[in-house]
View 1 (tube, rainbow, N blue to C red):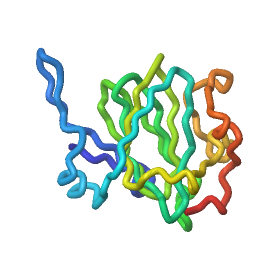
View 2 (view 1 turned 120 degrees about the vertical axis):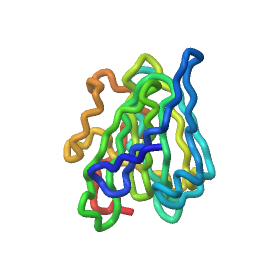
View 3 (view 1 turned 90 degrees about the vertical axis):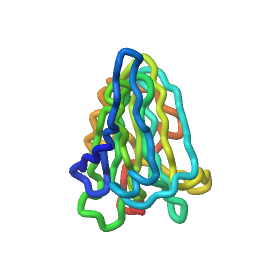
Length: 181
């Protein structure tokens, strides 16, 4: 696997070695040994999958301490724009984001360490999205920030009138220093 650093410390794009021939393709989607050697220690404890249609935007979500989460995400069918926003307390890049297209053809994965809000928009007719988490879901510390907060400047690549949001995400507040974790 190739690890590509982004403009924000800790956010990493993982490009697997894909072997293709007339039968199709094969790649190792995760190796604990290789991941830890190149990215650092992590102990994933939960895998999640969602299926969504065009225009769905999920996010920007995070969990508050003591149950913050790191995630390794990928799109196995369709196309998504995946976004991570730095909400680390005292970070020089607080409020900045990295966006990367993940799709079934590029096989890219995005590692989002603890201290980031995360979300994605679906750019294809449908998308199947998978993510590994290093902490279980804890609804009592579930949190998020407004995905269209003008201060964040995120281009979700979906017209606002086509966005499909959960009621909870629709009611989120803009990012403030109090959101820092």
